[in-house]
Amino acid sequence: MIQLAWLIPLLPLLGFLIIGLGGKKLSKVLVTAVGCGSILLSFAVAVGVFLELKGTNHTVDVFEWINVAKLNLGFSFLIDPLSALFVLIITGIGFLIHVYSSGYMHEDEGYARYFSYLNLFVFFMLLLVMGNNFVLMFVGWEGVGLCSYLLIGFWFRKTEYNNAAKKAFIVNRIGDLAFLIGIMMIYVNFGSLNYNEVFEQAHANAANESLFNTIGILLFIGACGKSAQIPLYTWLPDAMAGPTPVSALIHAATMVTSGIYMITRSSVFYVNAPLASEVVAITGLATALFAATIGVFQTDIKKVLAYSTVSQLGLMFLGLGVGAFTGGVFHVMTHAFFKALLFLCAGSVIHAMSGEQDIRRMGGLKKALPITHLTFLIGTLAISGLPPFSGFFSKDEILAHAYEQNKLYWLLGIFASMLTAFYMFRLYFLTFHGKFRGTHEQEHHLHESPKSMTVPLIILAVLAVGGGFLGIPDGHNHWLHFFLKPSYAFGHSGTWIFDPHHFNAEEGKLMGFAVAGALAAIYFAYMMYRKNNVLPDESEATMGKTQRVIFNKYYVDEIYDAVIRKPLDVISDLAYRFMEIRFVDAIVNGIGNGARWAGEGIRQLQSGSLGFYVFMMSIAAIVILFIQMF
Image (cartoon, rainbow, N blue to C red):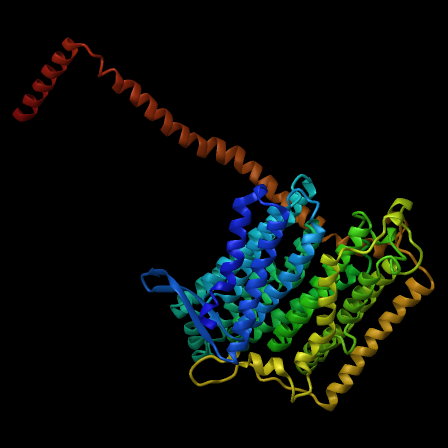
């Protein structure tokens, strides 16, 4: 079965080609069957590969790809526990979101185009995590960036949606450049870009700390772009312009976690690069806190979830920075369950509210949307880190490693988790409890979503409840750690890159402290937004200065606009007027005019007059004789 792993990315690609080439000629039923069916078949193959893997690493060669000088790269896939786990998440969550989309997007005129983009995205994401070398990873990396641009700007008739798509594309290019430079440094220093060869050499040359720090920081900057970390996080909240299922797939479960995958795959560099690891941990922690504070005052249901995603990604990077590679991957998995669930629940709410996204216009939806309400509550409990929900186990593992590394990291991580619990229950209470605050027409049309949307919610809710038991951090039964162990083994010596440390009794105290903090935050949210019925301010004019600053996201976009974009616009304008027009255009036009004038002169020699030709022959003969004589 493992040798058939090439079918996993091929099936979504075939789905894209069939739907993309068929276009409007295909019925919606056929588009749904091809779009969802290709992902389901891909998931089935992934399950077969996963069951056969049994903790070993395999390489599946497809064809010879690049063979130039000393660079020899095959188009091949690395099938190991890490890639197998990510493939299951991508195809499994991807299939549920495809099914959900068949109901959510059913009336959209771009139905076929939407599913073709979605299938293409899944193909590139699978290429990213299955590739056996950095170049193939980079192809998938750029591919998901392209698909993100297409899906964010899916409703391209709205200028603000196009601007959001362009912003995502441009901001990601900054990180991608650093990633590309990092890949070049790897090739220059290790003479290869194949994972096994690079990691073996890196493991054998672990003493070269400065090189590893440089490569690690460059790779991390690339991860900051895709995984929305400070300072390259600003694109992700604006990416909510795309359809809600797109937010669930790309900006919760898959694309934004590609940076986590890349750093985990390259963990040999970070284990031997203390400075780079410190940069990862501090940046992740700062992002987690920064985004969490912004989420506290947001009033758009998708924007709250967007900043929650940025904050949770920050916690994952905190885990990677303190060496908890399994913990970071564990939180990727649980986050995929509960955040995809929350986004799809938000889509169900928006669907029922006729497109309304402002939580100040909601309230009292508990009775009208019983399935959405219950599943949203489960997702909220999971992201808040309460036992026995999945988020509790993965967050606890990251915080436990942070405590071992640096007590301040742990304390700030606890505070970020408390903020998460507060603003998520704020969102829950304002949306589903109290009195309905929308229009009479909206209230009249309130209804639960169709089964094509609610069934994926129920499945994801089950995963959000039980997914955490795959990694119970008791020091004896951490299945996920032992499953992922072969992915951290580099070199023939069999040395493990990551060796987990558990706290036993002390960890019980840490768990209790984290749960108590989350419960305190939930109680505070309950007292404010449920018991006392406090509502968010209707306008910025009624907000306090601090609240207004945070509500406007600390004016980071405005600062970037003033400090970066506007000066670049001025420089570009000056360069156009003086360099482009007066210098570059003058040279190009001069060459063109010179050629035209030369042509005009030479054309006179071909006059068609026989007498002129005889005259020129005579002159030429005299000149030749003159040259011969002297």
